Image (cartoon, rainbow, N blue to C red; front, side, top):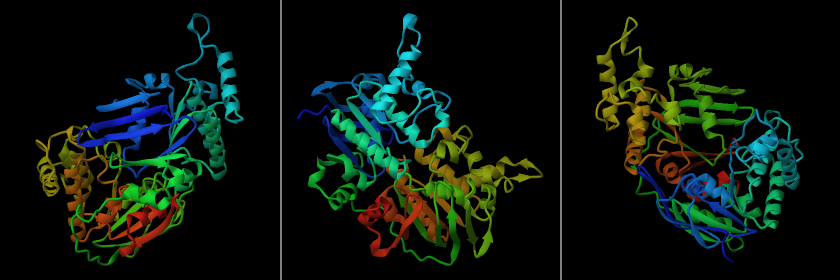
Length: 494
């Protein structure tokens, strides 16, 4: 059988990172192919390549066996490739019909939009997928599941031959997931090729006909789902030795510094509790939507939990803002360093000293000499490479930007530092520097919480690991229980 769409030897590199390294992927008519891999395996880059957003540096894209090129998203759409993303890319102020046909509305005389035809076609598509929605309803008045159906209808409003579903069930209830499965079966019956991306093994083995495994941007294996089991799939996803990659640590955790109990949030997480000791690195692992970052933001006072208790050095504290968290000695290095961690238009020295203005000012006036001295101390400790401390943070590499954000918080001499995806999007050399510095911080007695989606990083750096799944703690692991297979099994609910 000839694939409807195939990638052969696709390579795509970004500065400092090779996202895809000669990968292959084949999608067949009337079949679901599950693309499997841990976070960072290259799945998202494949989606953006298939939809024409990125163009590969090397390799070939074949449609019906004929080599082609998707220079733009429109080229991909004309070839019948459409995508349903985890987060629906829709507009609340528009109607259902307007969202479905946004950018390709039917036209009448003089090129004007034919509103009657658009409503009729929207109604037909909605009926085809079993969605009882009014084409004239405003999207803002619909629930999450209904919005997802509108996203599906939008994807099918073009003559789709290939449908990409990227974590489509992340925000759906059990009933809504079953309805999505029925829709997938319907699309298969229509002969559409479906690429299904999910971390949930029960979903993969429920609806997929084939599997393809990526790891670290490389193709590992593919085949029929009926010829593989969960254990073998897990081994292919995580089959790496982490023992030689991370700095060796003589871990000797000290006294308990942080206690968290009963943290709840109406929509993001429930019953989160743990303890943390000085000199310890506590890893948090989970799949997309597990609620790890959402909990860390609540711990730092960015969002407000519905309930929960925190003790620092045995003293009960109420954290309602980042300022209160900082005052208690808790700091947070966010995943999105560009938007949340640094002011990229400002120079390095001002970013580093921003939370420490009391130390660098006198009588309400900043003293630049003290700012430079404080920034230089922590920049040198982190081996940050820049022409000068006056360099704008936006002009630095991803790894050096991360070092600026870490330096900013270390300058206030915290008790607990939360690192959310500390090496995301940075090159191998910078990763090694961050890992070494994390080990140094722990050796000096700082308590570290590390949120990471990279299994080798979690296992290589952590003294203990808390695995989260769907907003709850699924397991707390230490010692010989900390294995790649165990992490994936608890995270995926296997």
